[in-house]
Image (cartoon, rainbow, N blue to C red; front, side, top):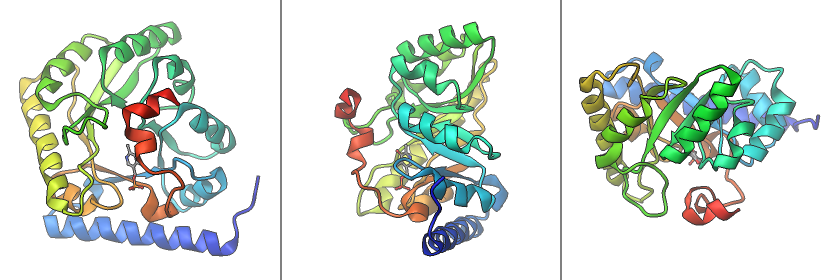
Length: 252
Ligand SMILES: *Cc1c(COP(=O)(O)O)cnc(C)c1O
């Protein structure tokens, strides 16, 4: 495997320390224990040798957005004790591939996908942990279930006993004003509380996956239990995020 230059390695390690520090500080300010907030490294476009640096530095959770890219990297890194989450828009024809490496799909947002997952999981004789992705910003460009449809969707998905619902995921509104993202995160937490109250059999609401490089502090203040961080650890990406998040990205 390609070696990582010493300077690159040191930069990743320093960035990682800085992000861990931000999480600790945000938890302290919010009166929460840092143990309540997990860090998921978002590794889209990041070459495997750089991901290896972060995992060897003690990180455990990795999130990828695209099936083919993730498969190739997993093949190079499967010797490491990491958990691979899928966090991107998942096309039904990629389900089979994604199930070969993922331990959690965070982006479940439509019943067609649920049916496909169930078919494959039944065949494999196993179950899978999932999060329901909610479009809390109401932006057309983002995937996810509409907030007002989330409870009904959770009830529907709960009928498939191959799928273990563990919580909710969202992408906050990207804006110069972090208060815009706060509204999204607060809404996700309120939905979580509301759904948890229903006591739907087999449905857990322990995980609130929200907060990224630019807004993780706000997300932690609003109750995040898992922040998903890419650029703050690995540096800027060549592609804009619309490449991963927009409806048009489906065609690629
Ligand atoms: C890219 C991405 C992130 C991380 O974004 P950064 O701003 O680089 O931290 C988090 N969640 C999802 C779903 C993403 O696609």
